[in-house]
Image 1 (cartoon, rainbow, N blue to C red):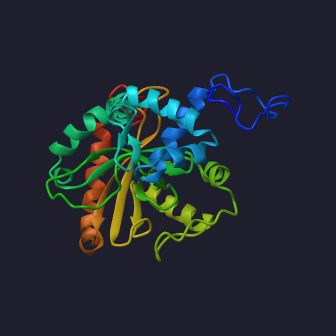
Image 2: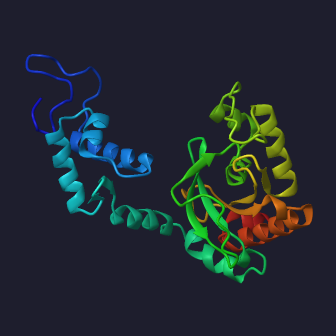
Length: 276
C-alpha cells in the first residue's frame, strides 16, 4: 500500500478495487470518518488507533491528520488526537442557521418557569434525538445531555415530541413494527405499542413525557416546534427535571411553559398560527 490518500484501501497492483460506486473524493470521505471516530471515542486516539479504524497505512493517516490539524478540525495532545475547536464553531453555526434556535435563549430567559430550568433543543436524526442547543437556567442542575449527544427518540421526551408530529403509520415505518427498544433504565418502554400509547398521550395533552426512561432519576417534558420556514427541520424543546421534584403539578407547569415558549418560537406568518 502506498501513502497516496486517493488509493483505494485493500487494492494491490494488478487487482481490481472493490466493487461498488467509486468515491469521488476518498480523502474527504476518510477525513469525515476520522472525525467521526474521534467524536465516538470520547477521548484522544493515537495515530495507530486511527489508522487501524480507517484501514489505512499510518503514513496516509498522518497526512489526513496534518491537513485536519492545520484547519483546527483536530488537535494533537500528549495522548493522541482529539476534536478541535473548529468543530465546535461549526456545530454552533449549524444551530444558528435556524431562527428558532437564535430566539430560544431569549424566550427561555423571559419565561418565569423556564428561566430557572435546564432547557434543550433537539432535532430528529434518523431514530435518535440529537441535542443542538442548551439553556442552562439559574438552578445550574447537572442533568440532561451534552450538546451534540443523542438519545433514542422512542425513549426521550424530546424524541417523543418530535415523533408525535408523525402518524402512527409513519412512526411504525421509521422504527419497524417489531422493534425492541434498549432497556436504558428499568422504566424504559421496550416495544412499539408502548411507544404509540405514549405518543397518543402526548398529542392529547400537548407535551411529551419521559418518566426516567432515558436517564434514571430524571424526568423529561418536551413539546414540538413548528418549522419557521419551509424546509426547516423539525425541532423540539424539552426540560429535564430531577425525579424527586417531578410531581404532577411541576410537570404540568413546565409543560404549559414549554407550550407557551413554542408559540413564541412559531413564525407569526406560518400556517400553524393562521390555523390557531
